[in-house]
Image (cartoon, rainbow, N blue to C red; front, side, top):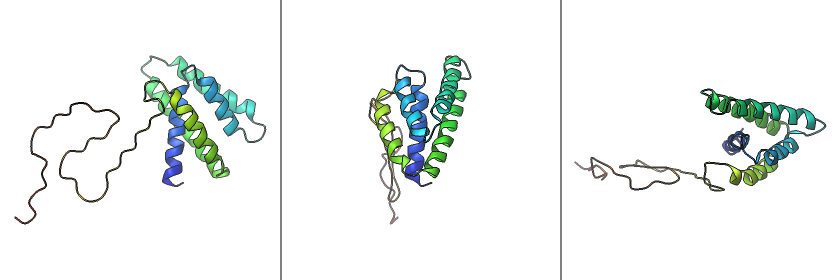
Length: 150
């Protein structure tokens, strides 16, 4: 699977898990059931998603919550990868679903995504990547490139 599809699958799984414990879950669930239920598996897929959600809701606030969320995200990633292997055209539907659901995520920039890239050569100084950074302070060298002739 190429890097773009891998990123799409990861984003899809993260979005789904993030929405499992919100009021937007039914909207996310409907989109996933539609995506996964190629054929007559609608009830099965919906039931599986509901079980995952019930487990996550039950773990809310427990020490196991983060690990369970990671496990559920891994399960959804595997299902999405399998779907895209069987039906590569489903990638467009998944992309639309992620775009539709991402703004509904709690605790994040609604609808905003951050993509940071550093490329080309050697960096001689500090690099900070993130969504929102205020007043960074650096101690030490000026960040000037070393003298290559000396």
